Length: 357
Ligand SMILES: *Cc1c(COP(=O)(O)O)cnc(C)c1O
Image 1 (cartoon, rainbow, N blue to C red):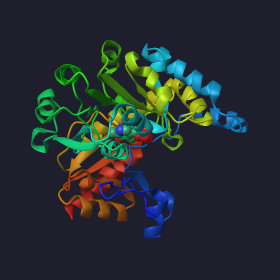
Image 2 (image 1 turned 90 degrees about the vertical axis):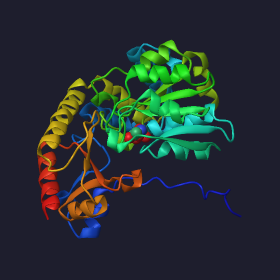
Image 3 (image 1 turned 30 degrees about the horizontal axis):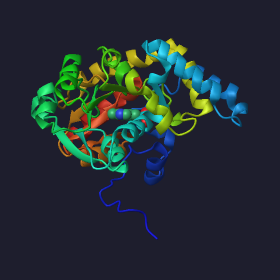
């Protein structure tokens, strides 16, 4: 037997891992720095690590209390009702829950190009179809309501990424609101704020409180440094937030993930250190890299380097792993995650050496 026709489905291409690259190059993992997947340069919140250790002995039970506690905590923080918080396995899991809850077979989803690959993947898994709107490189990848609305053709879900991966631009809230206002009543606008902590702009959660057609995605993978735990959530309109109970996996987030998430939310010091180092690193990169960059509101910077695949390969030989953006449709750009001060300086030096060759 065979699975259904998956020929239209694509595989997610993740940034390369340190161990994988070290093995290939015959180097020690400690000689390499990985700035390819927008992970937290300082690792996980230490408070989260303590919580994981403290609760390791309780993983034989389903995560009932911790799931409820984390949901209630997030609801309080965002000033919404607990049923509006949809915990999931990473922000990616929330995309799946929204697809499940919203899409009827054959309905269309509007996604940015360049953009995050999983929007389209999730829609296809749920028998949806993909249409794209383009963010124009010549226009600095600026996000405007007109760009989205001129491509809009009655899609059931419209994805906005703010800050946007891989370009770092934000979609102003008045544009989000205009898109929600001018699309059909039956269209959901999803604002993916995976990098929201790094941006000096307000969250779209305010719109979720006011409207029934805007949802927001957040994650613990980036600012909180918990990518390996797979913990994220959607914040959905109160009018239909009860759909979660009908589409979620039982106990959508694990015991250790929920415990770690709760601890990380109280670890202000870790988040502040992370965010301030990112702010420093972005400025350092704009100022010192010998190539055009775009202003970023995320924990990464997109850099125009010419032949991205060649530059990424040469950097890798120097022990610096970055993201070749060819798979995003940007064959002349690399995306460099903000590292610690030492990592960022080493990466910029290596990029400049490669570009000077
Ligand atoms: C990292 C990321 C996510 C979520 O990742 P998870 O690890 O699944 O939480 C979502 N959207 C974008 C644009 C991202 O870069």
